[in-house]
Image (cartoon, rainbow, N blue to C red; front, side, top):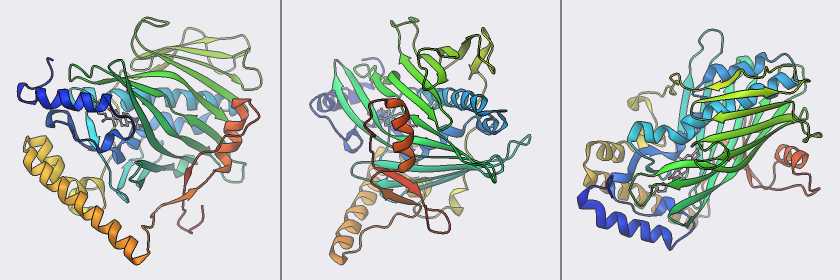
Amino acid sequence: AGAVPAAQRGSWTSFVKSIASFSGDLSSMTAPPFILSPISLTEFPAYWLERPELFAAIADGVDAEDRALRVLKWFISTLKGQYTSRNEKLGSEKKPLNPVLGELFYGTWPDKNGRGETKLLVEQVSHHPPITAYHITNTSKHLTLQGHNAQKTSFATGSIFVKQIGHAILTYQPPGKEAEKYLITLPKLRIDGIWYGAPYVELTDNGYIQSSTGYLASIEYKGKGYFSGKAHSIKAIFGPSNDATNPTVTVEGQWDTITKVTAANGAKHAKSGSVFTDVTSPKEEVTVAPLDQQGEWETRKLWEKVAAGIRGGDFEAASKDKTRIENEQRQRRRDEAAAGTPWQLKHFLHVDNDADYAALAGMFTGTGVIPTEDCYVFKSAAGSS
Ligand code: 0T9
């Protein structure tokens, strides 16, 4: 196996074997050093905003159909960052740091060219199973994205299959107008290249973006050897959700480079043959406060020594501080149990079923059964959701 350092081959083989005989929470498994990433999963929601101008541009849509297409455009443009950036930055997909309960990540993208400032807030709302909640706002454009993420993993034929649990809801609410909402469901992942120690993500199956204004984008994800024969292929059909057989716009191509439009006669806001998304230009990483201004629960401060150890090749130091963090967490849980005072989430509220989710999901599943899902909703400064 080319990518695995000679000294770690044995431990990689046993790691892969243990993945194969196990399904559930991969995040808690011990992996060999070469595959460890210094980045915590609480940082991942930042991928949503790495093209801030496309997010802001949703608010500039001239009508509901135009805005729904802009939501699809922004969404597809986030996929490259979400699913290929560890390969680009770290050489392969790597095992992220497993966030502790209450871990926080804050960031911003500055106002530029009138796009407005965007703020990101992330909280690890569960440790077992790991669940990450986030809230992203561009106040001047009246846009909010809120969601949560968890994963269910299984192993078959040499690949890891990841079902994403959770969803995102985008809200556009200009003052004095009724809120427009979009439910975004998340793709499934297949992680290939594991035997070689060079894992990478391919997306599979379907995803949906359902708007409260009645538009649905049905998205199909395929890898090499399927409809276009190319890796990272995507096909999205878009139109009124009550008329799925007559899409007004079809978008096809590669989510990590370019997608193009095929528009039906009735399409008002898209032209056949035009480029829909192009993510070949650089993206814009989130701005985070310097370490000396971060609180002890903030991701980069909390994992400072572990990350430095991983980056600098001092895995003993990394592992020592990781053990310290984990022991502190265990002690904290014991103390909470003894005192009968469970951990309080700082920014989110757990709800058994979010009404927005149920209403929007009910619009496209068409089964008459309204799905339920555990949700985390943002607590505003006033303390309500
Ligand atoms: C939400 C994203 C998610 C998180 C990651 C599966 C994965 C953890 C979750 C789904 C983001 O919006 C998008 C991208 C990548 C996903 C990760 C890829 C990955 O491999 C990890 C899992 C937990 C592992 O670390 C498995 C071990 C790894 C070393 C491969 C052998």
